[in-house]
Length: 504
Image 1 (spheres, one colour):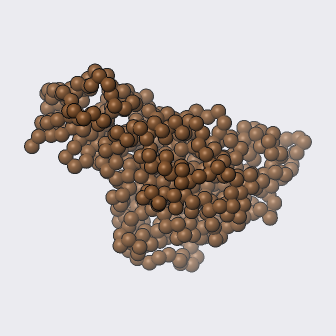
Image 2 (cartoon, one colour; image 1 turned 90 degrees about the vertical axis):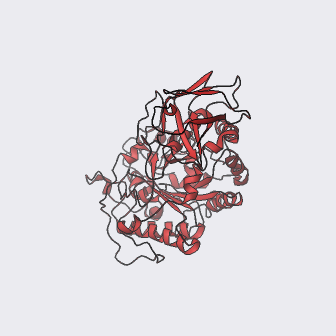
Image 3 (tube, helix red, strand yellow; image 1 turned 30 degrees about the vertical axis):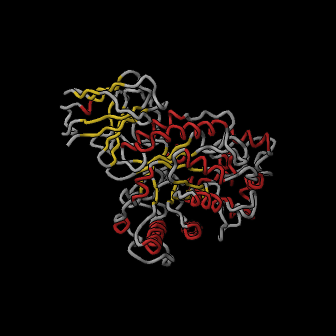
């Protein structure tokens, strides 16, 4: 999960992936492995209602407590991860990433207790990491010996998360980052260029570990910038078998790919299988496939739910979509800077007003427990959601997404915005309109979009309630704006939600 990775390529309608030599084993049904067939997909109502999900982007790369992409950059001299590895674990020709894997014990991992916190914080779906670019499966993998049952925690991490989520009525998802692993891991095959280990091959060059680091290849050096996904059909088959095993074994409600739809017909076959399997079980498509308009691969916005990494849309998107982000680095790092509750709440309101969902990774220590910053975030989200959830869950966009002085920049890796109480976002549910301030208002709130001459609503405002306050508020609707008088004490911090009702 990094801008560095996604800068390697761009998504498009074309793909350099080869078609499979033999038909892939998929569940037959409505969907075929073609773009036109997959474009008939419709997002299920549960996802549109959920609005907020929590993700455990967590695995053995958290062990060094140094942040994202450790398994790659520990093989790149000059990078901080290389220096950290040399100091704490030894030279990567002797002790490589394979030696980090057994150190991930997850000895404080309590999915039941964590899921209670996630539910209280307002999450309606939960996503478990299935496999990151490090090529380590977090489930009882039928096709790969490098997995969490065989080493490290010696536990079915995906299964434990799934059971905890479903016991609480939450929808459950998995993320797969395996598609990019083949080329992402290529530094492990190189050699050191400095004394005293000049010319020493890293452990990825050892053939006995080729199923972890992948067979040696030079694809990233061939001058093709579109190298997020390999063109090697042998790896395409590996990817298909392992991700089908993940989907069939755990029946997730959501599957996330870290990039465009991988590998041409191979990827389309997997998604068709996923959708058809849902139809066979539920009588209709009740699952979500997330992919991105980033990284090489295919992207058809009608065929999936678009995911925007660490970014937002500029306005109301006609199709449901999702932001994925983290409260800190993607894997735990010492001395990190964290998003606070105001950051997350305001981002959530902005995204929901634009027909999107927020999937938030809440950083975990390598042992599986929460850092203090994550604990505080969940506690403050629980308090805010306890009062204001009705303005978020089950809502739909209004005529306009919002108003205010702060301009947001659309696109991936552009999530920062210094919102104010004058920035307002709108959601609707039934006959109610909700107006959410992206800051803590004082005295009065003025909403220009609800002025009689604004043209967005022909009905007059009948009543205004502040969520968390029993009595209706005093207001005045003029030609220019709706002006609301605030109580002396606000029920929640960070952002306030007003429920606005209209006359006939």
